[in-house]
Amino acid sequence: MGLLGAATFAAGLNAWCDEKPTEKELAAITERGRALAEYDAAAWHATDALQTANPNTAAGQHYLAKKENGRWTVVFGALTADKTKFLVSYEVTRLDKPSEFGVKKNEAAKEDEGFYLFAARAMELTIADFGRATRPYNVAVLPAKQTEGKDQQGLLYVYLYPAQTKVGTYPLGGDVRYLVSADGVKILAKRQMHKAILDVAPKKGKKMVAGYHTHVLSDEPEDTDVLHVLQQDPPLSEMVATQHFLYEVASDGTIRIKKQKK
Image (cartoon, rainbow, N blue to C red; front, side):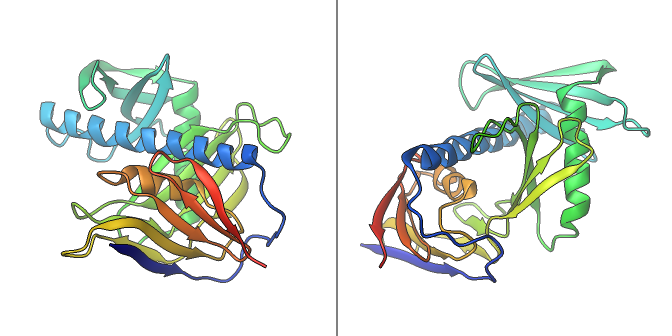
């Protein structure tokens, strides 16, 4: 048994801080990471369901997911030319099992002027800012909850992170989180979470007990560290070493400090 060793290095773009993060702050990272993992899984299963029911219909369309009453719905559609409406062509809703989704085609595209419109605007805005990627990327748009005593009601988080391209290999890094205005037309903040991209895969003949990477852009784990843990099958805990702390992101996404460095 052993640790999977890999380092993510980059210039320190986010401020250093040797102050010990609170349990509340770590729990907030876990909560965001779990929501992102749910979004990612819903989008994946919904896309598979749509392509099975109607091959090639998802091509060229945005997919956007939303959770209501404990159930995820993923819509596929496009913005109108003037970006005042989002036209929903398909609605894919999770059924009783997490991996089962029902597909509904809107013969006349349904016009949305609420969350999906704002999310689609935010998606296009941040993709343009992010620039061209050299590999496939996923995009997720989630409501931004109140953090650090600031009211963020209505604002949006947009995550851009590398997509899995090979079964059993899980990318980590090269990801960004944006904070976008409630109407999706203005970037309020941009957080580079990791710089380099690592394609993490188990080594032949070795049973891994945890992953490991060095994180230099901030002094705490990122939302996508939780996503990385929960994406794996089965989930595998991750050790994250920052300048002042060694963290463990457990297999359920819970974060704890294992060691404070002197």
